[in-house]
Length: 364
Image 1 (cartoon, one colour):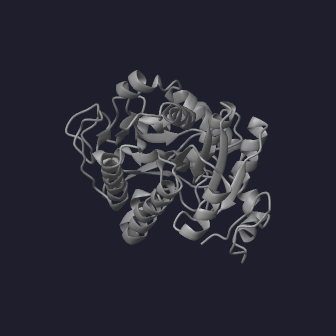
Image 2 (image 1 turned 45 degrees about the vertical axis):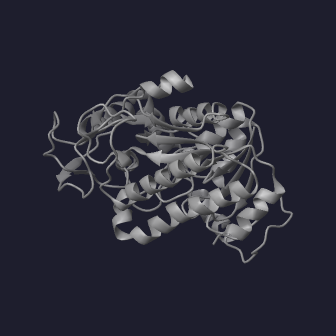
């Protein structure tokens, strides 16, 4: 299939590219590089032995995005592009609503205009809010605790209405639990800018010596050790879930799936396991709870296994071992790419798509 991948240079997007290319799909990437660089795409090419065509373009820029659709004939779209930090969403709610909701609207308008009505949407388990019971399956009521989750749930609602009003649309909504880990090679992984907002990259950066200790938000939850429990899923398993979704999308109508392992691990379990795989001491301190967090959240992935023939394969030690391999091989992440001036290149004043092989559009 010919697949457009928005946000394909990001953490989950880059791992999904590897799996798509390994299954011989043709991919085109659009990314505004606001939280990434070209370097992951180069490494995807190295891992797969295949070239990746990409555009430095924001999904909110309909004029530039339309030129991508004119240049290529797509069979489907996987939509990752968006903002994703829960804490930041409290500080920038309007930015989250604009980027995540309006960006999806622009994309869907173009898909309808060009007759591309197969979409896999990157959603989140945050749409379940505070779960009434565990594990969580897809029939559970939705209720959000933060602007990030609200932006994801709002997109889900508009996609459901779109599929209801036009039966030609095939839309698969994937609700992720907590992606962690890295490609087993250590070549691509999670590279947050600044202080990580997610627990695992923070633990990894304490292990590598960038931070003195892990700040554990909340030690008084109603869990076995008082710390939050989450369903951590290996990013490669998650990526393979997208491949399964795209391969089952034709004539599927609207489907919603959880992508998780069905097991929950506490923050303290995460720290202890990371100490084991890295053989490094990881100091920590308990802080106040963070607004919008819940005590425990883990999935029932049975529906995805039954309908998509997908199941998570990696266990928690594999997830953390691969994370450590990435972190130890790349202590500064993709900073070599940032330091080489690539950011300046993609932020050039070129405002139109041209004939270059790689950089086609200005980041807006």
